[in-house]
Image (cartoon, rainbow over all chains, first blue to last red; front, side, top):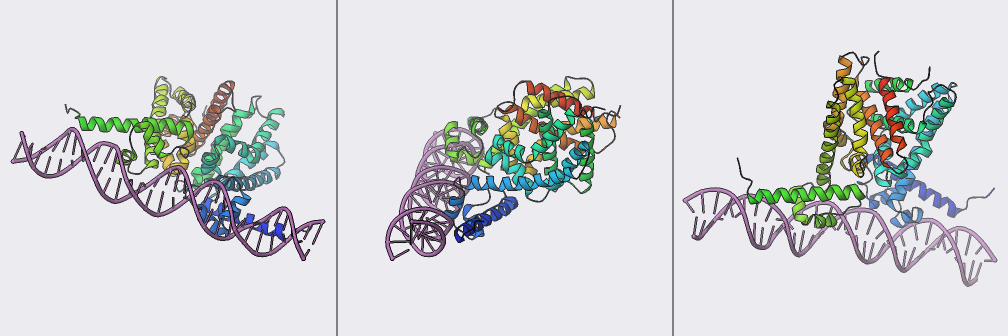
Length: 199
Length: 199
DNA sequence: CCCTTTCGCATACCGTCGGTATGTGAAGCA
DNA sequence: TGCTTCACATACCGACGGTATGCGAAAGGG
């Protein structure tokens, strides 16, 4: 069963340290405000290690951080959806769980603000699609095929709903909104989703 | 009637040149990929002029560019809305005009991708609020007061709808979408708006 | 008309940052 | 045991955003 070996173990440990500190710093202060010197110092390594693990440099490291953050959010969304039996309730539960997960401090900055700017909108969208928006599209498609949603192209719906929830998450995570706004937002979101129903 | 004077005229001309070239370059290649040297060279001035007009440097210049872009989009939206008599049709027309205006090549990059990352989400949101989202809020408030929309807090609605349209604009402006997607998106948006109606 | 001030900007310079090329010592392998 | 590979450290570079200072022309007052 393939013992790891001291080389591989050290390698993985270094990579984890870089990812951990990068996620923390990027979330705390934003991509542009974090220097590589500080980053590698916090991880206890040097720039040589960083470029060994992430040949693309700073942006490459950010990409890995973003993928990890999106994976965690996607997992939470999927778990919340699978807890429901009905397809419609799965959609609603997934959307609400997304709002809760994306609002976590720092997460929104990496995932929703710096992500598109650093990697470009197209690549960011592709990653988001693979991580979480994919669930949304599949849920909508299933509901259309089941006749619960009026027949229509799902792609525009995915973008509209995804954008609505992304912006809502940024707002809810900011100081401009209070705790009562979360309930009001989910209520409004439910209404918008209900508008799609075929019955 | 206050003749301008050669000093003031030159000053305004230089400022315009900087804004014009900055808007072009930021739209073409993005904030981070444009260097100040290239920027001032394209405008026919030097860095001294840039920091004379925009003490905050690159970010300050970007802020001015963003304000101008948002102003133009806001004007188009307001004009399209005022062309309608009914309050509900004003809302729909304004939303659709926003999609058309924000999809203009380069506009979306400055306004929706680099904007939040460069200035931070909070400041970007405040500028967007003052320029275009304000119209949305006022329209929704009027419709609520007129009883055309079910009584509810409008702030969450503004964020959900604004986010939905922003993301939709980015998608429609990208190569990932075709011309037929615009019609499908506006149709889906109309449905979502209809869901708010009280009747 | 001249002197002074102010203004609009150009020039020269600096610190920092992301990125790269090369060195090195330990782990792996025959 | 000796050669190879790998994971990383060190040293260095060019470019960039930003700043301090200089300068010439326009404005303003006597």
